[in-house]
Length: 162
Image: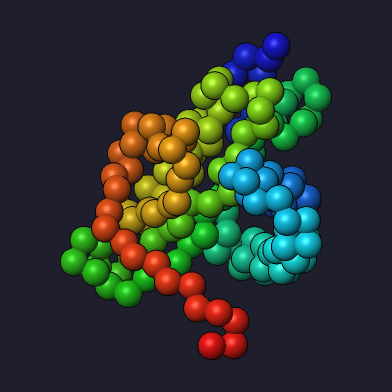
């Protein structure tokens, strides 16, 4: 069993597209979404989005890579949003945390926390003061321990073509 010092936290790049896409699919599968056709459609739509945003710098990712095998054990992403000026952060962008995933055999070792810390540190250097995310009950404690707090937000999904 590898320890945390056996993992290198590194920025993601275009060559990591397959790992990021695999993590995204696994997140949804573990949450109970098992429609293979819908997963494939999501993947096919997400790949060009990811390439475009990685190239533009509006998607930033960090990966935990095994120094022994090169295997990607975990990842986190940030989608940088051009946000309108707000009372809490006038004129600064915000970021949406997404694609946070750790392979089951590497869980409970602090990799997600290390990746999130790398993302938060990067946000600080970029003057990004507002972050948001969607979480599972299992992961909520990690986010709250890093300072994330629940907010009152509503959501509506309109049917395609509405």
